[in-house]
Image (tube, rainbow, N blue to C red; front, side):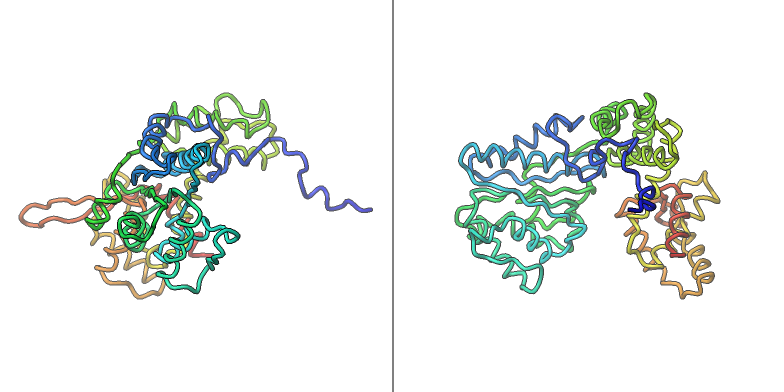
Length: 401
């Protein structure tokens, strides 16, 4: 029997022992969550009534990307469900990624589907085809039929189209939608000013407890990566790899996701080069790859003109690296030139201003209001938060594909 194709694949991975430990969506086992002891304790205190079948506090968790918000919320919810079971309280938690399920209908369908056990409720929750109100009615029935208490995690809650589901969930009990089941809502946002956008009634019921997760420092990032180092085979990591990756990540963002990405990419680079160890030199290459991949993910699905606006800001940033920011009109002039090169009609200045706001919302750039005195009045300056070289590289790749 021919084995001519066998050498296409590596049967024995010389670098990774358990690569899953370095995946972003991997929920670490107990004891592996590093640097968030205080936050975990405070979250546990807020949801503690749930283990007795009582109403937990509604929570809003803020913090930059990669500060452990989702990780801790899922961890606490899992623990609460387990302990509640010991108290003969039937509970569960539902997780919604609001960046993906950003409409009220999508979000309530996801919650109902994940909590429903058709064998018990005799209820179907189809992916689509029902009105929003019907999904709600089925959700309330599912909850009252199956559970004493439920926690609902709304991750990236600021991506929801409106506040309607927050109103429905946080006031379901007092509105008489539920007879016996209690709901606790955990909202998670990267936007520290998210609460300011909320309807006052939603704010009063949703924001019972608020928590801010600060960025990780270099020591915490080092401990986080060390806790996952058994993703690699023994002796593969050079001693300087984790400290260097932690120092890079802490200096730039304090983002544990990026730090873990850097570590994983460094291993993949060693793998692709046929090396037996992961070296410090691979960390710098891995950091560049992590930044590129993150930005590529941020702009995925963006319109051509949205990219042209970013390209204009990147061009200005590269040509005047000492500038702290650029006015909207200056960006618009470069944007118009890019449109001419692309043989595309430019959008209005007002629409470009809106696109810049959208990029600021995604933390791709930062906007600062300036005062030009009595002669000029106030104006806005925009500064890239991403490396302009990375921005330009990814935008060129995107437009060519």
